[in-house]
Amino acid sequence: MAARAAVLRSREAPFRIEDVTLAGPGPGEALIQVAGTGFCHTDLLPRTDRLGIALPLIAGHEGAGTVLATGPGVHDVSPGSHVVMSFDSCGGCRACLAARPAGCATFFPRNLSGHRPDGTGAARDAAGGEVSASWFGQSSFATHAVVPVRALVPVPATLPLDLLGPLGCGFQTGAGAIFNSLGVRAGSSVVVAGAGAVGLAAVMAARAVGATAVIAVDIVPLRRKLAEELGATHALDGRSDTLTQEILEITGGADHAVDTTGLPALITSLVRGLHSEGSCGLVGVQQGDLTVDPLLLASGRTLKGIIEGDAVPRLFVPRLIDLWQQGMFPFDRLIRRYPLDEIDRAEQDVASGEVVKAVLIPS
Ligand SMILES: [Zn+2]
Ligand SMILES: [Zn+2]
Image (cartoon, rainbow, N blue to C red; front, side, top):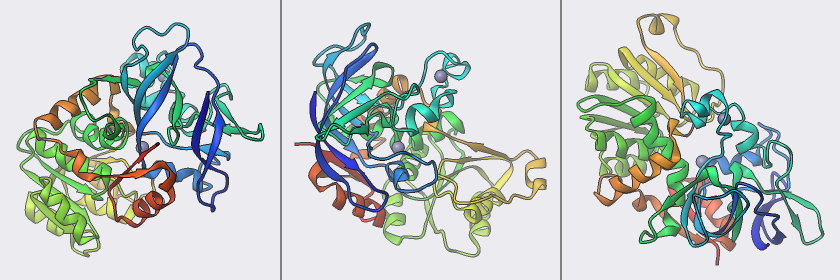
């Protein structure tokens, strides 16, 4: 299948729009015509040396689109189906069997290597060279993607398909942290650090579930204002030296905190702001070793790493769509559309914080 894709060939240079050839779909896979793909901070990981991700690579893992063809053994979607593409998992390991696919034993090779666990999953460029095309099982910064059907979430054809992709990763992660990972309940207090796409999804979800104190923490005044518009009851400056005291004054000790920044000093402030049995979820890519006084944990506080909001995408994304349609999860307010060709401008605007969630539209 001939496709156009944004190819990352060096950690420093801009993405390049290229003609590529995709193989497949193979057994258990579908070929998707991409309607739109969110730009997630995780798509910038291949620009760093942190995971040693091999280039060239087609990134993109918050896609939505239309099924064009299916491989052997596919029964749950068919050509014409509208789908959100979420993360990949094996379906057979201990975590997958327990309905915890984000804890899949092969999560990292399937989603963060750029190829399938067996090393296949490459597209060909115009010169015949290999380009990794299985980032999160989808590599959807492209007109087309070949995706394991297990990662697909069928959605009604009446919805604006191009906007729905981020529900499969960033928004799922923030909302899932609240609903699934931390089990936030009505009347509780929640602190959310970092008012980006994941953090703002957590703020909206906390309000939707009935949390009565929702404190957004960010260093950017505009982001704090946006968080308040989306339901935060308080907004605090992340640079404040007295952040923990401010949280304690508002909540008397927060029931829950969600960190999306990965900043160790900030996370320590959040843990200190919890009540004695409060829980803190870590969603961000960690920026260094964390120091926490063991006495804080001895009394019952919990620290928990969270991947993909502990969600089962095929159950969770439809829930988010229902909440959105009832006005309780207005994620579309955070989105700005860009043509795929303008991916570099989208990348700059995401990196600078100018836009919360860029969605790339292949034309
Ligand atoms: Zn698994
Ligand atoms: Zn993501």
